[in-house]
Image 1 (cartoon, rainbow, N blue to C red):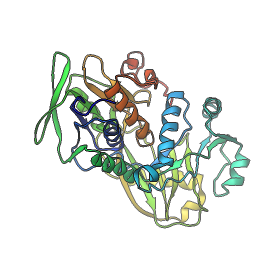
Image 2: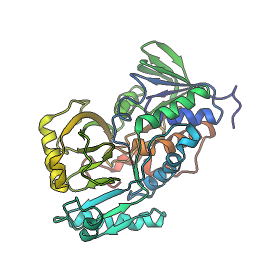
Image 3: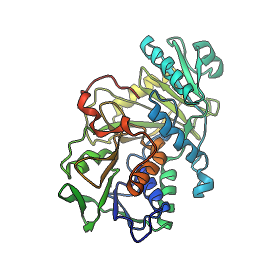
Image 4: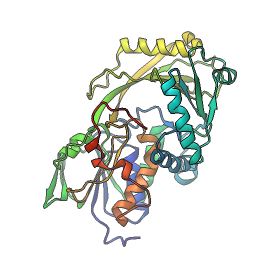
Length: 383
């Protein structure tokens, strides 16, 4: 562990769960000069507006390992942080209509089992037997991860932030980064709305604004913000609890329990990149249509409210993690494409190792920034 008088000056940009967990693990390892800056309020943007899904059912081993490490933190969160984040391992149920999707599910299940992820491959009949409220007539099958689930993303992020504060991290809200100073290819500090801060390490965990932060050091990283919309029903107890996270893969529709309501949402593949977070009533109707198709009983549920948030998407739906060559001292953990909350604990720990120890045992090659040299926008995504 580095001595406290020799740790670098570290500025973390972005107060979601990844920024907060990075701050916590840095401080836990002995870093004493850590400042976390948030342009608004902690965990109010991407993290706080997410649906809090936590899964291990990924197709890529690197994503599986990130989630496995994070799940261990979530399972013991109350003991370590003194906060109940309401982690319910109600499972993730992925549904496939198309043969191509089903083939991908079967291949992914094989990979998951090699990494000791509990996963069940289910026929439509088995799905109907266990979740009788689902319409399975157009399904080929599904996979179920019983150890997957969901938690409260705001409480989790604040648990990290509050513990980081206790360990000496300085957290400043309503302080926007407006520029990054660099000299000779090395980071020197950040310009902010409240003055300059000297720093030899700058960590970009700015979520949807990560691309803008990267451009401050002359980097054009392929990360773009896209709107996502979530809707909550009025209290609805007609579906037996616990309700898993149900992912209708070919419709990009999902829903899960959120006592006493049901949360639901869907991706719009035709919507262009933007920072728009307004709720679109016409799109809500499409979400309701998908909901009623997959779970007809939801026709009886009323919509209580909706909100918009942002995904930060890369061409292959996987993040960029690590120090960026040519910008010494500039670290990124960005572009999680909807997986940031669930992988936040592991990513924060990995960043703390990179910054303070100069390396990590975790193989970050799948998340290297230069992998996009050979990937074109629009190519098939593998997550």
